[in-house]
Image (tube, rainbow, N blue to C red; front, side, top):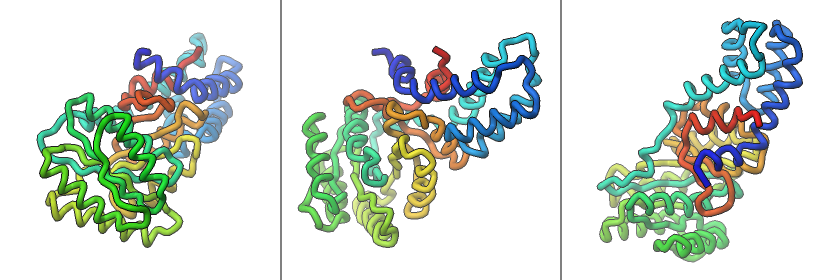
Length: 305
């Protein structure tokens, strides 16, 4: 399946919501203040966020669309241009490329966001780009997390450094980083716990993991990626806020976009936090994690059929 087709099918629910919503609002040819307010309210209800929705409303108002043109089509063009201008600077396609230096990558996220699955899929893309990869099972709070990570490691044929459930996650991170350095493995993917309800412990755990990796590689960790579940809608905004306080984030991955009409939440995150968007999850298969591309995202989000 071609990459754009994956985007198109993955965003079908979100695209249908946007398209149908605009059709209901834009009945007459002229877009007056009342219609502008309705468009803004609709975009907010579609999880695009207050700030981004307000900007889109302003752009439509400034455009003064010719009443003889197809209003729906013209608004779609404005929305598409806005998405690309906002999100193109947040692309980070270089993330997956081979680099000669060792990279310690912390993968964070609440339980159930698809964190461990995402690590497996990121690992696969790394391997396809000629990287050497190792997993570190540092979510020692859940025994199932260790087993799940091992399953993904077997699927893509990489090693996992682990310990028993309940053990010190920092010691696992240290062993994995040390092993990677000794064996010339350049990508160290660290699975971390996601217990936001106990922020103090989580913060200490993250700091400890970061500090022990520095003992092996002075400038580690190099990336801190937050995995977000699109089906959670506006709740993910709070997750970005809280995790960013615990340890500064360097990027996000949005999963489960194929199963929701709430794809607009990625626009809200981009507008508010300006964090690089590493990849998006458009299904459960191994190759359904797609490197983020703003144009493909915009085309899929605004599709009209």
